[in-house]
Image (cartoon, rainbow, N blue to C red; front, side, top):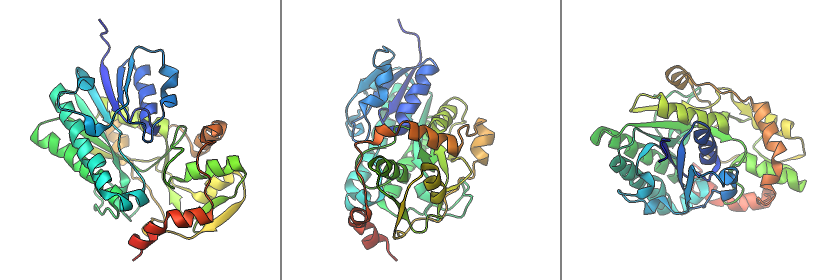
Length: 331
């Protein structure tokens, strides 16, 4: 009989989820993954393909039931599954609410009925909107688009289950995660996927505004470590901001990648700077980022062929793809 502890990772074939699977297996866990492969890829888990400690089920979290067998005997649940991006959330708000809010409720119920020791939710810093920086956990909540709202409602459900059902829960509000295995398909979105596909194709980087905007980029293996610490060290009922605490400009990213640049209009509702105040997570979980921005970008460039089939964006296609953004979020 296998005596290893079990961890469930929803969205475990995805970007952050697959790196969390790597860490959990290294730490001696049996890992149960559920992923509908909307954004995840089975090849993200292929290094574990012969490992009997990994079980993967390709289905939607909206199909999870209270007595779901995948959760049976689990010690921890890491909930990453969901859908992202601003424009699709404006165009399909029902799908976002069903997946990110009600999908979370379904996973919570499965976790509750299985008697887990800790549920850790992947929350989003988008709940803060245009926040003061560095942003503390006490900053006002002001989601500006349905994706942000749906992720925050999922987080509210997590803490409600903690309060009403005494489920041991934590949430980690991720700022700007980046790294290998980040998404290669779907809507126009994260800057790294856009730029790496452009670099492969020999096309200029499409820089929004003047490129001086800064983002609190935190490398994916550091993100996985933070989630593991939240499960193993975190006091229940807490949420933490997660960033590197060292914002980098888009111009610095372009400098590291090397290439020509074209500029596209700045978009409404985008902050000039995201910057997580990481005091709480550093002190409470003894966590700190280990991968520098330069090291992280270098790792992505070494693995650049991962993005060879990603869409290659240009100013015209970006203008078309972000029209809804301007239509609904322009003040």
